[in-house]
Image (cartoon, rainbow, N blue to C red; front, top):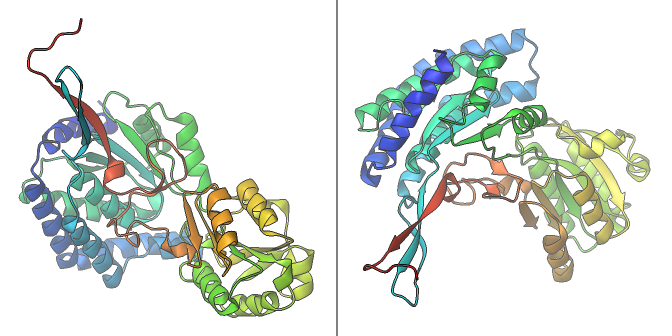
Length: 415
């Protein structure tokens, strides 16, 4: 029997037990895991250093190294996200709605765990803990399949998660990592419909497309982030500059970082040159249309591919548009339905933008970087869903559940 199949069988058993585990036990386990992460930080950081060194040898970009690297501060943030989950209401058993039929039969729609959740993800060790924490709180067993570039970090993290969680009363095998980084192990996970209830890919466009196209297990598609900032004719330029710079440069390697700047033509001679100069001062390389190129010699010509690109790096596309409608059309044509922002003092423009832009998160006078489960007050997130079925936007505890109908009668039979 293969490693992946064995993991799936054990996860199914763990999921059945975890679904019945009281909230108090799950919360105590999350607290114990958070403490263990901080208490064993040296062990985790040593493993992570191996991954970072190997990544540099293999030629990973600075952006990918940044996603891979852990620090005491980042481990502390990961642990704090688990503690914030403890404070949130357990969704399992929540009555979503209830009603009584004329014949006296009562129906409740009740949240239940999904069961076994598989996560296929790239070089972000924080996902290992975020995914495990959300799955455990919502009563799901989780199978983790990370990338080869983070295997040492993920192995160390799984060891801490498993030991601390089991000691605190969670079922064994509630969190399992597939240690094989061969492509075949991911393919096998994608085909285990008997043992895996849902699969969530987290990573770049190629990974997500592969999982969506090849998986036999139902997939929740998460977030390629071609995010836009549109500076409207009625924008406050000081707000616009702060929002633009934060959206692009605060952490360019993540999916909610802005990749394209759209500027209304009326701002092309005033705001745009200053915006370009400010972005360049942060090391951003710019690719733009003819108007953007005329505004600064720092802007190189953009291609059709640039309008669709998720750079995950200090690169940004720039386009000048003639109207709000053109900005909306550009976003809906080239965007990835993730997160898009408008900067404007015109209420009508803001309302039109929020109604017409077909994205999971639409920002008005705020950075795209706020599209995040933690920032929304959800605790850690499993990812940001761009699709419209089951879950959309930051996927937190409620999105990690399904529901069942519980029907109670007093002997009624159907005529």
